[in-house]
Length: 170
Image (cartoon, rainbow, N blue to C red; front, side, top):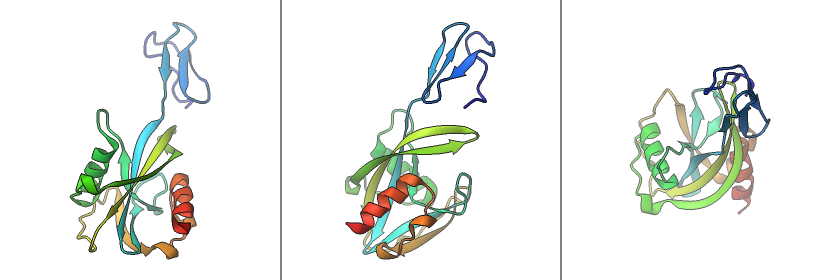
């Protein structure tokens, strides 16, 4: 967060980070809030198996992840699920079949900026394993894992690790 030093209003190197959510300029009183970003994660379930992706980019390249991503401006979380599943794996989702499960706070570091996120977890049940066409810039492979065989340490993000600790026990 300390990489941002120059005020976008006055141009001086007077932008100060408060350590949590805002930058302020000591020269012109400009304030920039770095609010929580919304993100979705979709548990695609077939019987007792869950579809995981393997990350093909940083952060956490090579780790297990759930399909999903950041909510765009003026987009609902459910529409984000539909968009992300299509972008990442060419899955067409019936939005009415998405089931909201939980939300958890998380952090996501991208290019030296730490984003605080609120991760919204959804479940989408399928009657058969899907034919997938992966967006290889994001996903290197997909893996179906039985619920009771999930290894928490192999999962990329803390919010998903916490989620699956509870999900496996339920």
